[in-house]
Image 1: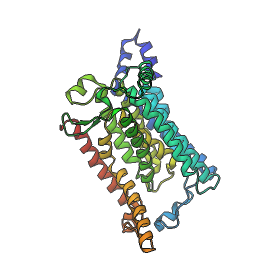
Image 2: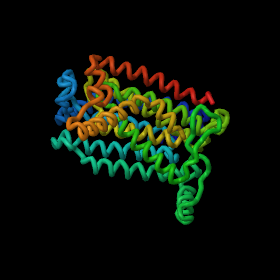
Image 3: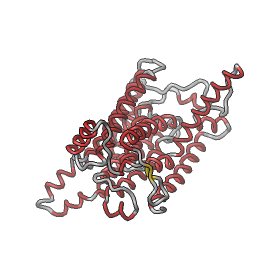
Length: 389
């Protein structure tokens, strides 16, 4: 929105051309989202508290969490407001990638909102049924995956539609350029051809999987939001490189025209996340809820797929991966031992992983900060793939 205004003013005042630079707009988007969070945060928290939208606490969890009962939740709405406004103000609204990422982010946020609202306001412990949640997350993910499969190989939406129709007319046998290949980091020319169907399936699992992984991680004050900020900012760097023909060629990454604009989105995500952390830091004044966790995870997964860095996302989001795997191991082992021995047994004291460490004697702040430190190391490792090939 402001980019269009700046371009119009630049016709008479050349100084406004500076706003055409993605890097400047990414910085401004970060600052804008941060400012919006600071300004609206107290009002959002008061609104949630006035309606008694408080967080329920598990009775079988760490006893130190009992004092958190009633803390306002669904604060992820603050993140989405800041992120959405900042992106619309500073991003190029003619860019197709900006819109598909916003659709996934806000769509997943809507699913999370309904789930949270039913749990907290209607006092329904099940919230949105698992089947309904899976359906809507999958529906949005599949639509996004199909669109991305053709959009990264087409310069505009008209060409996207044309490629899709050609693919259908060919009996789903049309091959797309190698931009849909799975890129293996640390190697100059190692990639795995996926084909259109393979790419859509991979993209679906990345988007839906990352969304749920961030949601599983959101269990301690500040635990999920800071890794999300760090991974999102790093993906912004990959987006800038992928969208620049010179840098992408030099660093041996696929050039995705238009992907650079996602740097602005990632900047807004980082700013909104840091603004939320101001209120979510221990002891938290507000919790993110599914409305924020599902949305942010979906955003990270979508950006990673567009810039062709799914494996790097897996590396940088190692904390999210570990949290998810801990749940899978715990549930699988419990069911196996119950079937075999008649009594369910556990590997971890409690899943997800952060609760295991709490029950092991770590303080909540120790778990959070140590997971942050691990994420910093993993993000730096992921960024090293830009050059080490």
